[in-house]
Length: 239
Image 1 (cartoon, rainbow, N blue to C red):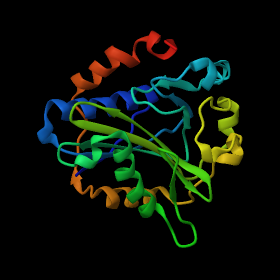
Image 2 (image 1 turned 90 degrees about the vertical axis):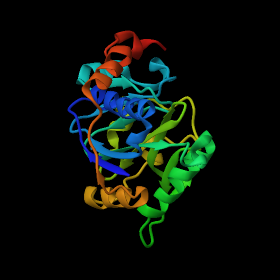
Image 3 (image 1 turned 90 degrees about the horizontal axis):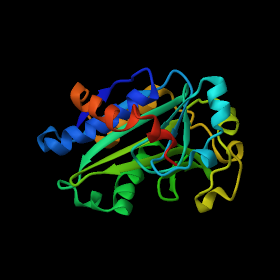
């Protein structure tokens, strides 16, 4: 699998690149699978494609504080990203791996090995709900997917050393919760994994066997994603 460690300065640009990596492989399957690792130097809020902005984001607070808010093209819930949060993206060929053919099967296929790879003695990581990873029932990772006919984009967060007080300031309690959350507030529900960035990246590369150098998607595909979604102001506020 290809490996790309490449971050862009805005959440919008990073989300467009993620989608472009998927589009590139859907149009040219010979490109094969890729793991991308990236991070944000500033706080930002990423909503799922079906999220309702007035229910899932303190949007006035974000605007006042200059926190970028974007809507992903993948599903899932709303997350805060920024310093201390590592993000990963994998684009995988479901034709080459039939376990990726269903939503439930793909989450199991991706997250169970990742939980094992991130575990440390005395601090096991387990899969919780459909798309979370946790330590001692505390969430350390969430993920979401966008699926095309052949390829699956799966991207997620890894809380390594983030200031988790930002979550309650920028996000209300989510309207949809996994059972294991038990209506806990953000501070009581999340924790940092405690790995260094280097350790987390090494685990990701090992789990996905990502050892070949990768490259960003072609600029026309990135621009296509921007034109069709992320540069359109109605994309964010459509719900």
